[in-house]
Length: 156
Image 1 (cartoon, rainbow, N blue to C red):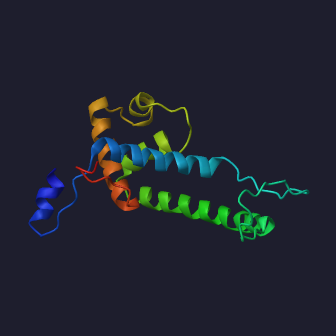
Image 2: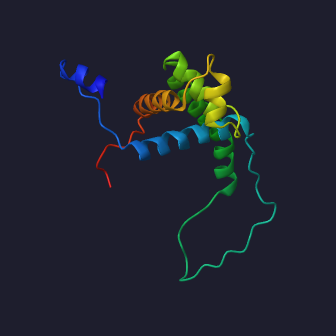
Image 3: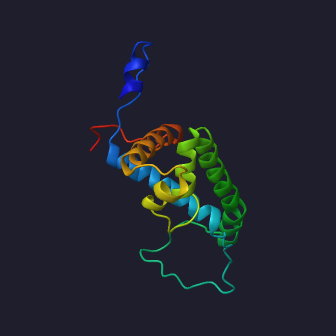
C-alpha cells in the first residue's frame, strides 16, 4: 500500500488489515447506522401484572426493579443511538468527496441500492467497476480506522 510506504519514512505505519473481515465490520456498522437512523425507536413498557417465575434451588437473593430498568433503557437508548449515528456521519464527512458520495449513496440511504447503480448512475461521469472497488476499499479502510473496527491481519 502506497500510504504505508510513504508514512514509514516518518516512523508511522498504518496497520495491515484483513480485507474481508474489515469490510464485513464496516458494512455491519453502516447497517446498524441505517437501522438506527431510519427505523423508529420503540419504547418499552412494563407489564401490568407480574409474571410467575419459578425459583429453583431456593432463594436467589436478588431483587429486580423492572420498571426502573425500562425507564433507564427508554431514557438512555435514544441518546446512545443518536451518538452512534453522529459518530458514523462524522467519520464519513472526513472522507474524500468521491468516497463520501459512494458510502452515502450505497450504504447510508436505502436498503435496496446496488453497487452497479452507484457507479453507473450516481457518479458523474460514470466510473468502472474496478475504480469503484478501489474507491470503496479505501473508504472502508479509512472508516474502519476512524471507527476503531479494523480487523488486523492474522487475527483468527
